[in-house]
Image (cartoon, rainbow, N blue to C red; front, side, top):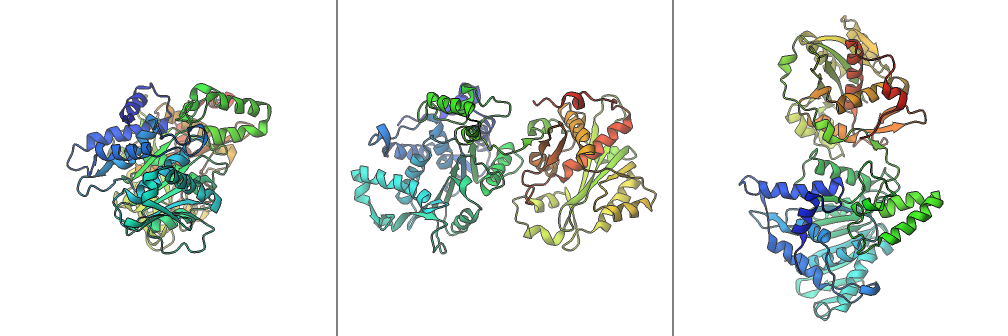
Length: 560
């Protein structure tokens, strides 16, 4: 089969291929890594031969349904790209696969089950693993058997496959290597003792929790180059394990989080795209007019327009949109443009405003400092002090690199398993000796004790409620400050992470507030963002630049 993944790479980067932000970032990651691979320090290389091998194998497999049944699979450039990335990148030292985890999210009717089935067969007997255990995993038995059933039909259609593989009691078995390919679901009574070489997790959005995924991850420990591949469409419940996994992939592609063994690609619409415009649908449907037709989608769109209850179904299943997600507050690209080179010593003696966000006794707490400009074109400069209890760091369940940030000096630890407000107070006193802190802004809820103690030391404590009334103008003005680069900070990975978590809630009166994507959970943090909003807005008012009536309050924000 002709190898077209390089054509896809070139077309995405040049704009000839209609692609969303996340696809572009996934492609760019590959291109950037090719450059890194020229250095001895980068541990991976791209092997065209390994990439070609999986592409040729999938092309040998046959379709099992519809008018193409019995015909060899012809891989489109977008499909070749994903396969080439996952199987082509290898360790320079061992030659083993680089990527152990794959997250692929796209709209329905884009040949997900067909390709997964072929991958499962490849991992069963062509990956060089003795006693390979391959699982098609899903939330229930019927869903788990879909990918496995497609693989079984592929075997039945191929005389070569039938010679090598047998179906024994619901398992495809390769006797020569003592390997097996089985369906697996939450319904299975015996899920302990798995020794997973490959797991294919289908429609992860339907899983109520991460039980199956964590079980499979735990079962890969004794394998040299395991592969855990999640493929899904968006869902209707954003507070789910799948959305958390998708959020992590976004952070990896955005450069906020590093994981060299995780490959992710998300086919969806960009913010600002008109979901009713057929010219953007290919962003969500990489096989548009190949596996799913524009005409078919236009028919569904007509139905959605006259039957509002169908609209969300169309957006989720056919445009891969998480319909109940709040709007992301600030695009990470705009935030990164606010970075400057600055030493803290340059700010000694400068006027500044402090703002606190004190969480529960076991969680992240701290304060931000916003320094007023000395000259007309100087930005408002931000510093942060974050604190976390030492004993809780390694027991936290979320995938956030707190320990690395502590080692880098971005977070300070307090003794014990609860936050020590005394250490925060000591830090404030030390900063008050170094900087000219004119105000310390607190949300009075839960902070009265610290406020009283600091006031007793002649520091000016101000109440700043985090209710909608006070926060809405502050949030709107801070957004303008970021977009116009009136706010500046040094590279701070904690804040980069928190900015990526912040979403906006808007009521019917156009009042806004910042929210976490998963308010019921602890894996997303926006504490530093709240500190910045409070400190910057108060600094701006003190500087005397805020007009009586803001254009943003009159007409609302215009999203870019």
